[in-house]
Length: 326
Image (tube, rainbow, N blue to C red; front, side, top):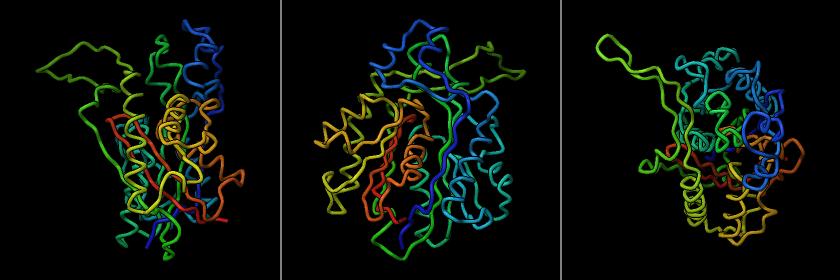
């Protein structure tokens, strides 16, 4: 039995912010941002929330999959920016969808989130415990960044992406291989502190903290681990990068994708990109770009795809998928 992707969905905030818009608030320019990241615009939440974007993406994916919300047995949401510490975003999503039976939980793995979620759903489906799963990545990173820090605020956007998965008896389609890893020794390269201890026995200054990223460290991590993880997934399948039709990588930075393509000796045309329009939307990144291609009819039955996310933790995850839908 294989887990297969039955449908995709995504959602973005209405507000579009250009590089020139950001340059009004921080010392930067359109040229500076484009040259270093490939990003031109991004969507920034104003009235939207993580849970509202999560619901929109999930409903779009369910409709695309032709699966009813009440038939979902597992809901996994990857987010670091929900408006609640608890209940989980997955529990709120379950209630909004009218589902009464699903196992629900959030995972906190940043930009690797949706591929991590696929790994979890794949395991549950293969075990026979789950027939249909919903995996969502959603982030409102705009509320975590320091909008006076040009090193980080120019990089990120907000959004959500989702997959609906189901069980298939056809071993020639679906998730053929998948892996998820953590590299905690480098975890402090990308951080966001939570509330400090504050009780009658211990007081700390209430200092507002923002997302911190060591860009060079994360860049080197991605360029090393992405090719390694792809080969780790492909080798047992008897496949090489030449056999892959498209590589759907996390849309963090255009230079990372260029470097990975060069290291793997693959044409850049096999690496779809959309960060120029949406920026880095973290856990929503991989499902969002796949949803764009799916809705344009650019995902073809029988084609082989690599899905790869990498980010906070540091974490990374890679899957090889043979597309089933016509």
